[in-house]
Image 1 (spheres, protein in one colour):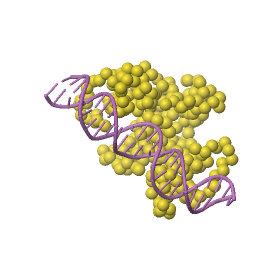
Image 2: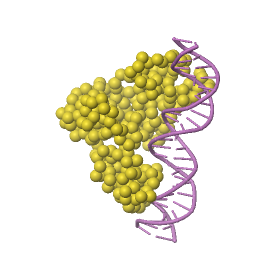
Image 3: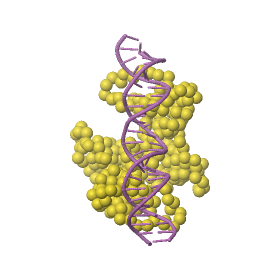
Image 4: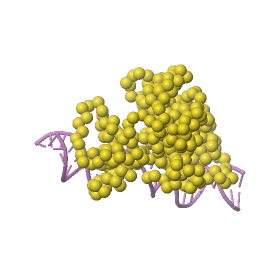
Length: 142
Length: 142
DNA sequence: GTTCATGCAAATCGTTTGCACAATG
DNA sequence: CATTGTGCAAACGATTTGCATGAAC
């Protein structure tokens, strides 16, 4: 991984630009493999290595977040503002929530434990709109 | 993975009993590999396969939780009561917090999004007591 | 005695990396 | 032209699985 400390001697590339574009126009927190499939439409010979390398660079530049929920693959998100997530038990889809981030929680942690929390993440779990109350096992997002 | 739906035709085994015991007397949310090392003290020929298989069974029986935080390996925990976690940025150690679980959050998700959240997890991030404010890069827990 | 659990090794999956060549600044 | 990015394939680390044998019920 390149360090953020140095002058970030990154060059631009069509591939990386496109990956960021895809992430900006997609709000499903895609996996590397999903991005790879989309990328092949424009760059038929693109490799997974390139996808991962660019995701790492974008994350290093702070343009993208890498998130790895319990059990699921790594997902990527161009929404770098702090926010909470809803994860569907059935199909694994992830939805951003409009709940305001509650900084007071970090303070409560300190009161209770003495530990200084600088941030926190919340994942809510349940069925998403399309999986509903049904027992249907949705197709796992890959 | 065996299903919970059937009659759970699990037999007991010394190995599984010992793994559960280790998890009960350990509150550091160990990795499979840590458990493997401890297991070898009692069962010199135990294999990782056995460790993982038993962890899966214990999780299926609801006796153990498998938790996989962002970037870290899977960790295992015999404390199955809902609780929040503090994750150290520096050394990766995980601490259970005494903060009461706030069920009202699930309701707020519904108000805001219409999604029905059945549960939620929170991970707080910061430096643990031993990593303190120091820039020391603690040894990553494996 | 039937079935489940084990140990071993090989397989799988997501991700990373070394290398020779192409693209960028 | 000095260096970074790419495509390819091989390497990697965590986890899973197939198989023959041993333990549990």
